[in-house]
Amino acid sequence: MNAKVVPVVTRAGELDFNTGQSGDCVRRSGVSPQHTPATKIWFGQVTNEPGFRSPPHHHGEAETGGYVLKGHGRIYFGEDYKEYVDMKDGDFVFVPPNMPHVEANMSVTEPLTWLTCRTPDNIVVNLPDVPDGELEGYRRP
Image 1 (cartoon, rainbow, N blue to C red):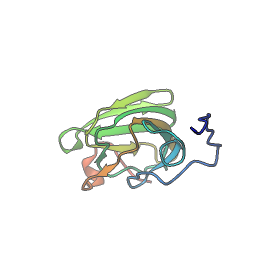
Image 2 (image 1 turned 90 degrees about the vertical axis):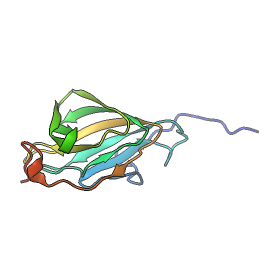
Image 3 (image 1 turned 60 degrees about the horizontal axis):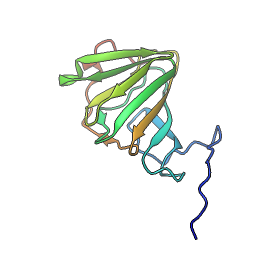
Image 4 (image 1 turned 180 degrees about the vertical axis):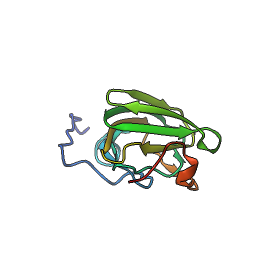
């Protein structure tokens, strides 16, 4: 007999930290294979405290979509992370599979909070770090 599949709610404050991480870019699962019946999607909340960033990383085969709830984020990419795109409240972003990048909070006073969705799971491949001074405009508090 097959088990009945029903909607699963992850309550506010019960997000799962048992997922791939990269430095000061903290990911919490809302819908994921780690704690729901999901098998082809990872959907969660990502936060960067003021002036904090991730180390360089990529998400393997996963396509990634993001939505900025609050703050000013920047994604550095390309050769030596010299290229970048900025995002603010209400912006969406797509990051292609296997693209090395750095996710940064450009504010030194306000947190950055965004939602991220990726398929098939939260693949995180951390890469060697880059000095802060090589990221144009980036600064810590």
